[in-house]
Length: 64
Image 1 (tube, rainbow, N blue to C red):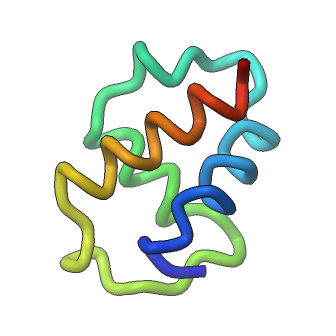
Image 2: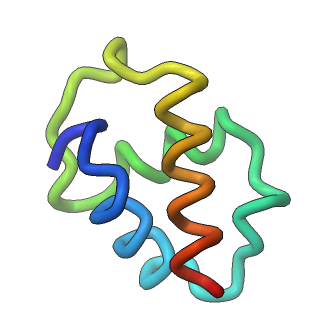
């Protein structure tokens, strides 16, 4: 899984952390959690604030 797979990342994060409010998660921790996903395999340098914002929004949408 790569940084560009925002929807899949959001699904896996919501399953791995069902009790977490994604709005209260800072981007440093969000990036760490994404990189810790078992299927994630991408360069950490390819991540930026826009990518993390997209992941956070997709996670919010997934939780709704």
